[in-house]
Structure formats: structure tokens, C-alpha cells
Image 1: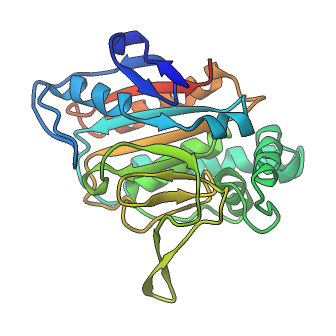
Image 2 (image 1 turned 120 degrees about the horizontal axis):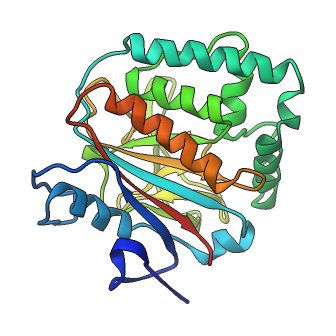
Length: 279
């Protein structure tokens, strides 16, 4: 099965996915290359090429035909620790979470309910292995974690818009992003009791990967240690996950606020995005 890339990638045929939209927010005149992928173009064109290389396996859409992923590449982020921007967003998110939880339990929030069902569909146990949105919502009432500026910003956006959201350091990324159902042989680097360890997803688990290994297990449950964001990160791939009843407009609204928050850090920040869906 082949999907045809649309929008700015009209002549590129790539298996496994359909790009429905590519949106360039701000451009830059500089050239650069992604790890393991030579992209001799200006920055927005290189970001488009990187997004164009992403793929979602048909088995994922077979599991959840309503699934959509919004991938956003952000470049030119100034390095730095948590600041007033990230703290303000976290406080707003905590207030938003408390208001939502005053009206219904966390498992009755519609998008969380959908993700719990998706986890059950590939064999995960949602009471034990929670999607990232549910994990954050459960922590928000007592206060969200303060990790680093970029992680704090995307955690806040995730809570405010009720959408699972993750970020990968592109300077530590290897090749193009892939969402697939694991064979069980893939490597996942993580930490246990302060020690680096390698785990393996169970067969059929939905995982994000690059050419080195699994970057996120169980769709949006746990990120690998290799591609995590830090105070030094300047280039990020953000992944926003949606199932019904989350609409495309809600997905775009979350990406818009994320882009605004990051653009406020420096005029040199620029973003490119694509939505991936089954046709």
C-alpha cells in the first residue's frame, strides 16, 4: 500500500502515510543537515523533507482509523533553563486541570477515555501503563513536575488542550520518525535505579522509532533517555497525538499555542508542521 504525499511534497511518493497539511510558520536562510539524512536545502525546505520522510505503518491505522499525528519541527530555540514563560504556562495548566477535574473524574475526560481504549486494543493495561495525558492530569492537582523549560512548556500545552504531546531532541535523533507496531526485537534505552538499561517493547506494542531504536513506547507512554529534551536543546520534533473526539481544529489549536510560546523565546525560532492521517 502506498500513500501519496500532498501539499508541498506533491512529487514525493512515500509508503505508509498521507500528509494532509504542511504549514511553514517562519523561515530561515541557513542550511543544515539532520542526523543520518543529508538535506542540502534551506531550513524550511529541510524541515519539510524531514517531515516528508516520516511514516506511520498501516497496522497503526488499522488499530485506530481515527488516529492523527501532528508533527512539528522547531528550530532556532535559544538554550536555557526554566523561566517565567514556562512557569506561567505550568500554572495556567494546573488551574485548567483542577477545573476539569472538578467536573469529572480523570478517566471520564473524553480524550483520555479514547486513549485508554486504544491502549487496551494493543494489549497495554491502562490502569498501570497510562497515556501521557492521563499521567499529567493525575499529577496536576498536586502540582505538575518542573523538568526543564521545553518539557515544561509542552507539558503545559498538553494539559491545557487535553492532547498527548511529546518532544524529541533532533540533534540526538537518527533518521526519520516512524510509528509502527513492534516486533519485540527493537531496543529501547532507558534508566533504572540510576543505571542505563536496554529494554524491548512487547510484540504488537505501538512505538515511535528512529533508525537507532524506539524513541517512545506505548504510543505516548514513556520516552527513551537518548532523545530527551534538556536546557541545551535548540531543535525539537514535537508529536501531538489525537483520537476522536479530538478534532483537527483542536489539534491545530494546541500546535498554534505551542508555536507561539516557543516563538516568544526568540525571533529566530521557526516551525514547520504536518498532520498525518489515513485517507
